[in-house]
Length: 262
Image 1 (cartoon, helix red, strand yellow):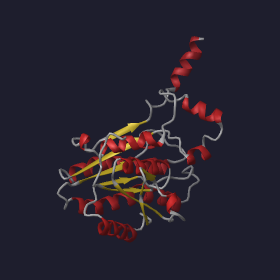
Image 2 (tube, rainbow, N blue to C red):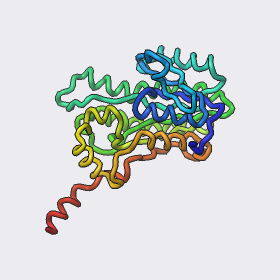
Image 3 (cartoon, helix red, strand yellow):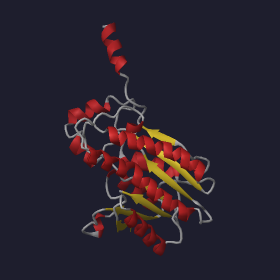
Image 4 (cartoon, rainbow, N blue to C red):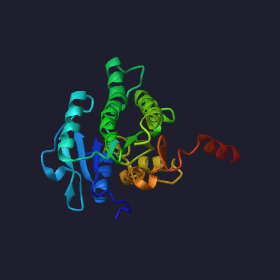
């Protein structure tokens, strides 16, 4: 049980095949929604699709950076559903690269994927939602990188900061029919993050110790927040960013103070 009922609603989750996006897709499936996910590469078998309660998401091959592919994706959803109730803009990411070493092409690519593409898709989804009696909700997955220094992923952090500003602006522009909200995860334990950063159990424990709640987020933690923000229970929430970071990071000065007291 999710505590939320999305029966009869249609949800699109970009990048919904793995990690946080997959957890979000499966949470909406459990809540009764019809879920569409997109990605550049189609799964080889339906069993790979997000699934829950005996139901599977529908996959549409689309690169959201290509506006024509994004338009075709929305047109296909319109063929299958009379409404598009929720769009979760989750697709994104960045390789590690110091700005001094990054090529102009890499910087532009990161900003396009994490800022320009979701804004263009949101613009087109809004055009449909504005015509719906029930309007709709657009939810952007931001990042704690937008709110603190992000060395090695500076372009990513800057793009996500742009998203958070856009959320506040779009909430004004598209009200009252469409709500626009964001979640900003901190450290999340996904298969990718384990492979890249936390494969060593000791490294994982040390990283978790920096979080006040003593652990990294699970993808389901982010999905639960998305279910709430897209629901009628959050009907007065718009232009807001919900930070999901377990209380933040333990301030370095506390360790220094401990040394000084010793």
